[in-house]
Length: 271
Image (cartoon, rainbow, N blue to C red; front, side, top):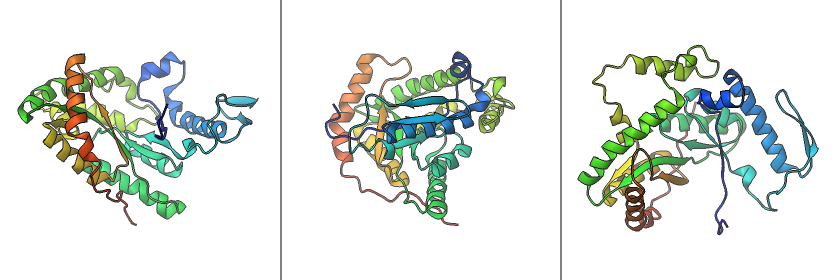
């Protein structure tokens, strides 16, 4: 089914209190539960027969079925997505690869990635890693047409994320492990009405004519030294027909040219 491609496993602690409440799990245990779940996942992929005795999970001697085939790289392709800068060292020390879903400027993410690689190299002797990058994409025949769609659909996506994760919720205040988001909630609540929140999404993601999309992608690629790019084409109130037209134009006019990008080194800070 993969046709020669490598399968990746992406993980994150989660930010939605409704997701924790649905499983009757205290959200302030997220960091400890994440670490233990990662250890359990690795044991299940590494050992044909394994058992686990942790704080949250107890698993008697058992085996995972179906098992990864011999030669599988799943254990080498575990990715952690982090939204708060405080989660970055977790990914670095756990020897997981980085997955970026932009929440800040790419310059900020580049700085975080440099520190992530510094920890890997200086504290563990591991090689720097390249990230996988996720962006929301809107491709149209002209920049003007793309801007019209992007200014409509990208803020709609941002609003849906704000509502789902309840970024302005009081539950974030004093919640262990989510101090960064509590600070962001306070900042958002105090923003003046005229603040251009939509501008953040427009600046971080990829939209425009095929030429402009290619230029934006190449800039991100050069800054981050990314190994792969994941594109989200359907979001907001966008119709299926609009999303498909954007995706087909991108696939025809942009995607083939990305293969010619020069592969830059991932950022690495030195102490």
